[in-house]
Amino acid sequence: MNDSNNTLLEPEASAALSPRFETAGPLLIAGLREPLDEQAAQKIPALWQQLQAQWNDISQRVSDVGYGLCISIDNREYFYMAGCAVWDFNDTPASLSPFIIPSQRYAVFTHPGNVNRIRDTIDYAFDQWLPSSGYALTPKDHNSLHFFERYGESFNAQTGLGEIEVWLPIAGLKPSHSIP
Image (cartoon, rainbow, N blue to C red):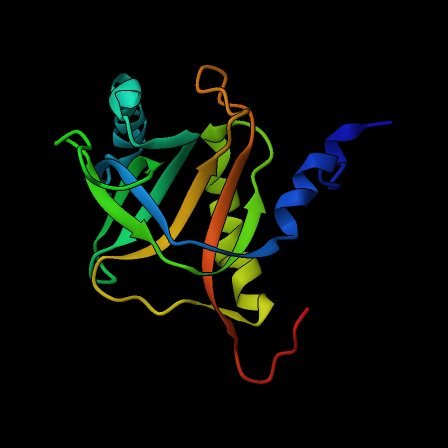
């Protein structure tokens, strides 16, 4: 059999196509942030390396789960934040910025494979699933969450593999759509 014409998705890839829905938050995140621009592909891994160097100095850290946040400043400018969940913002290292992930409903996509391909899952969620889902993104205010990535405890930064999820904040169904 010739696999070169096989258009079926790998079994693990199908998980990204069907999100689960969760209500979560609020979640306090402390992390390092940089503007997203044409150097984002280089800046984001560097942010994670810098955060990892400080990881054990964050005494308020809740777990070993990492969070990558895309924050909308004014619907035209975005920041990326590499961070961790904390109990509170008191006594966090001065180099870390605070952000609160709000309590709301999320569509959660499991990312199959290596983190270096996470853009595929993000693009799918925003460009394919969202327009046909009947859901809308939560309206954005100044300095609001656009989406976030969750790197579970099984995520291995050396291999780029493990538990990775993309969380989209959803406001609910658009008019004339029924719940899936």
